[in-house]
Length: 369
Image (tube, rainbow, N blue to C red):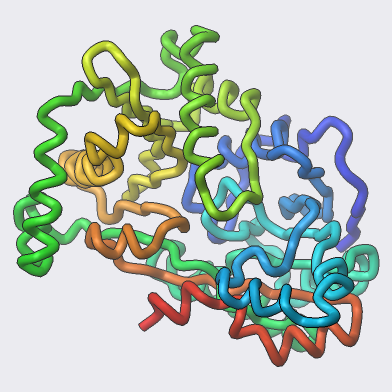
């Protein structure tokens, strides 16, 4: 397997290729193409050969470490040089628009691991194969088994396995949202019913990506503004999606995107971009106006609206994404986890990561079972 670690100038790795089969891909393939054509701010798309999507970006290894730990590290006498060592241009195998790292079907796990270790890793301080599935619930048994092969092949070449974030999902194994609510504790059920009363003051419109409405520059710009509202107030700032990415996704009729628009009177106060793919509703992006969204408990309202959509269309899962696991647990989510395979070029830091990797696994410590 040949790899080219240079950024791809035109960023069109898949643009002119008919859709191939990928392991671990639960989203529409076209969404990955939009990521590669319009990567997040500061990202460079890489061609690793054989169609494996990857990118490079500046990355702070302490991004997923909890605040008390970061404060403790910052208090160390050698914290400043250590923090400099922990921030570097990093190669990521995967994307930030797919829930998992994806790989063309029939790729050899051993050959890929060897390519990463010998051809890619020497060029980067850190190399991270991000979000390999920790179980088969969403990707299926065959893809999960292949990912396990890759994990072991990477481990044999000096990669360190680090537990990833908690991916929230809801099995649609209930006949109504009332039945779903009855499974919650009395206190949670009472709190959720109170929040859902706010839906009475909202108007919800549904559009599909590619609709003529998204040819309107003011509307797409407004949706991006709402996305930025959520991004800017988030604790983790890593993949800032660009307005051209949003515009290209919203105008693409082939990817099966569904956009729910939430109005208070005539004012647009929120949107939710989801994908109906196979037996899942995959919740990808949300945008909100504050404080109106909080006043109307819009996050909880949109959650239950998505459950209703999943029920109406006979889906098996509502996949709710990585962020805010505490909130999603309150809303009734279950969790599946991933593994990151991390190669650190510096031998001292590699040994340090092996000893301290639990510090980077806060989601698994809190929500793993």
